[in-house]
Image (cartoon, rainbow, N blue to C red; front, side, top):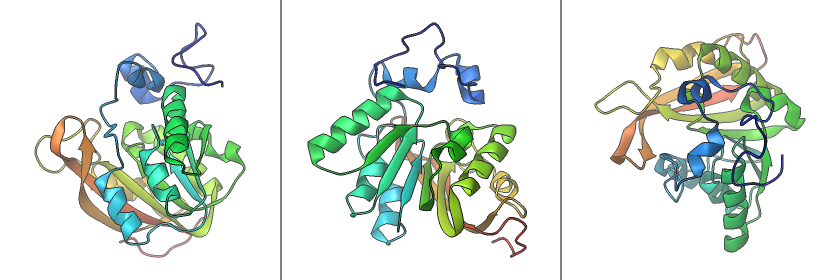
Length: 228
């Protein structure tokens, strides 16, 4: 899919099946970037991601799933790590590449469907999901989680930053804690190490919306280690 500022065919989804969020919104993710910054585009990385980076939470080859305009990707890449940011929004990816060039940061960006991550045919040691998980419905989450397992090996770490259903003024698509437990439960290839309350920055919340930051370990499928 070439760089562009908007769809160039009669199919705004370019042949892929739209996600539940896209069906509900009636437009592709790319359209969110056509008229100024998207609601989740802060012009910088998420504060929660900054704290994980400062604590040394990222290592090895890193995947940023649903990277948008790439601010989190670039923060991680600035630490000297090889990072691939993927998204379906070409307008956002074009912005990410331009920003990387302007800042002199080496990072890779590619078009990829989050529900088919296995098509990347690559393996990663750390994965970041900042604001993607909560946009998927239950069926899509199972596909997504399986795809994450396909591009990681046991021992890899996944960070999921998503909106939560706790506290006032929640963001769209708030996630219950038990939904995270179910999505990454036994038999999925993942084990939840921790789920902590967080704030998710948006352009409409002065101090962020209520959120979760989950730290999740990749384990052999069928692993029976206890959940946090």
